[in-house]
Image (cartoon, rainbow, N blue to C red; front, top):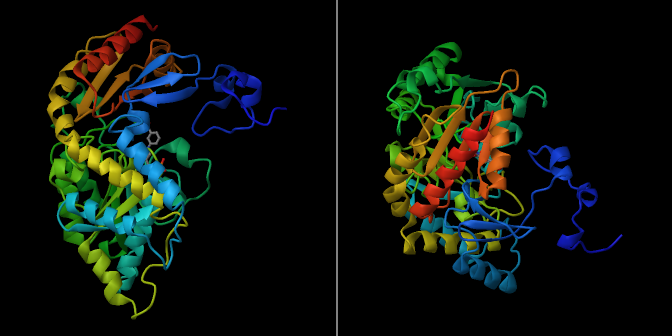
Amino acid sequence: MTDTLSTSDLSPNNLEACWMPFTANRPFKANPRLFVSAKDMHYTTVEGRKILDGIAGMWCVNAGHCRPPIVEAVQRQVAKMDYSTAFQMGHPAQFELASRLSAILPGDIDHAFFCNSGSEAVDTALKIALAYHRVRGEGARTRLIGRERGYHGVGFGGISVGGIAPNRKFFGPLLNGVDHLPHTHNLEKNAFTKGEPGWGAHLADALEGLVTLHDASTIAAVIVEPVAGSTGVLIPPKGYLKRLREICDKHGILLIFDEVITGFGRLGASFAADYFDVLPDMITAAKGLTNGTVPMSAVFTRKGIYDTFMDAAPEGAIELFHGYTYSGHPLACAAALATLNVYRDEDLFARAHGLAGYWEDAVHGLRGTKNVIDVRNLGLVAGIEVAPRDGKPGARAADAFLKCYEKGLLVRQTGDIIALSPPLIIEKEQIDTIVSILGDVLSALD
Ligand code: PXG
């Protein structure tokens, strides 16, 4: 046994002890894919191959990898103060960060509760929703409404409101009092739509059905991803999110947008709430908040929600019994502040907006490629759906993922969908490279 593992020691045998997340561990360990460094649009593998990052890490590295201002800010902070006690103590950067965020958040969403992952942000938002109604004297509002095919992380709250069967079925009865809206995916009506599909806004009316079934007085909140990512890029039908907002308003139900992937420029606006011009009551964000450099997430709430807690609790009392050891961690705050500077200085959200048309045309160039049954896109996101192999759902897209990797491109595969979400610094030639590699790979697959 050596006590340190050099990269040259990484043969399949000594990969055993690590249980990898959301990964087929056995094939991976038999044939590992290991990254050892990253810069801007590329990773470098342990063998020294350069891989073009078609998915911004996992929807997080919006400004590209290892950006010096972010790396240096984290280095400075770790040398100055590694950790700061999170409860009943503070440090300046967490307040500066919340203020900076409040300035770019939509409407009166102006408070930030910091957590460490998208999953924690989701569970925090659901808990805030329940507690909010309770402190207002509407404690019967305990139901939470999610959506089929929704992904809200892997906490018990998130998988309960989430709608992806394999993420739920192994884990018992989950939270009770949860119901789901129908998903909005319909290939017959919407295949190959550029941008927002025209069909499907009426699917939001299913919320009225749930209100009739359960009564509004029992419903606390609705949570949706404005653009569903993990399930394979589902773009909301035109008018759908506005309709959800109207129905929530009518019945006093809080609306939560889970913007873990759509936040921080992915659609060419700061948040999807801006892009769709729909103001939710809370936004959950993570990933792009620190450019993926240090884990951090947040729940952003409207002023009225924060004020309700402040007004309800007796003077001197803790207003919300919730928080994490690492809420507002100094390294994460340093990374986030530097990330916001990069986004601002390079005007990256506007850059994404400017590239969205080129991106749309490029990815829709895959229409007509063998096996491709849909291409969908918005901002710098795309989903390419391939026909499933008989009796083997997901196998064709899984092969596409591996072949792309062999050809120097990282994509995400979920079911029979390939998801693309490159860093917002991508150049047009790199968009062409993504589409050309994918086109070659898909045409060569049986
Ligand atoms: N909400 C949404 C909308 C997400 O996309 C989470 C919550 C959970 O975040 P954490 O930080 O707990 O993982 C996510 C995460 C993919 C992919 O390629 C997407 C996510 C994570 C990993 C892969 O689709 N989204």
